Image (tube, rainbow, N blue to C red; front, side, top):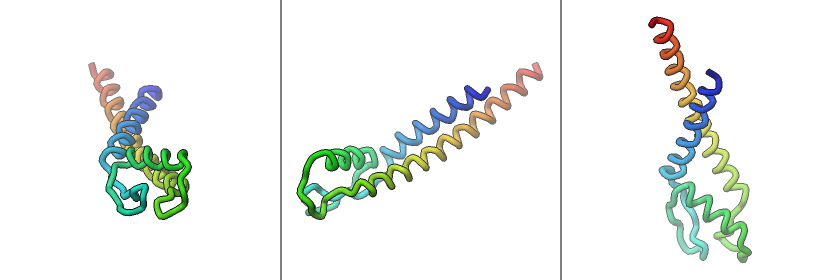
Length: 104
């Protein structure tokens, strides 16, 4: 039963992570520093990692790795909550299944 609950948790975590990454929006400064744009978290990660890897001059659009880490930890924390909810649903489903099997 623990293995099945483990699967429930990880499926809930992954689904939550992907959905939050696509649906939650954040603001990103354009590389030239001239404007802000609203983008999904997954696009924010891709843009931020790309900006950290490529050498760029310092300026208003310089990405701080600490900001990306904080956003990622918040994203992962919310996804852990989604995994916990899926675990709860899985526990209830397994409990109902075991009671149904014992009755029949």
